[in-house]
Length: 59
Image (cartoon, rainbow, N blue to C red; front, side):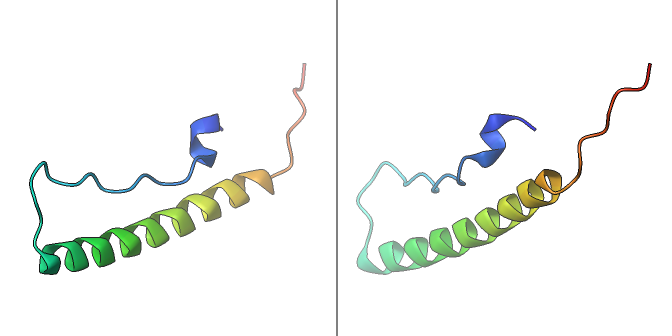
């Protein structure tokens, strides 16, 4: 498993302009929800791989 799979999910980049209060609130909520879902899925995938015993190489 690549080491990058253990890094928490990134935040969504903001647009390069001023945001209204409503946009800030909406974008913040959507970003937090996306991060929670992504991190839960990532953590579950890593945990499932970590619990699989390593197989010995048969020669």
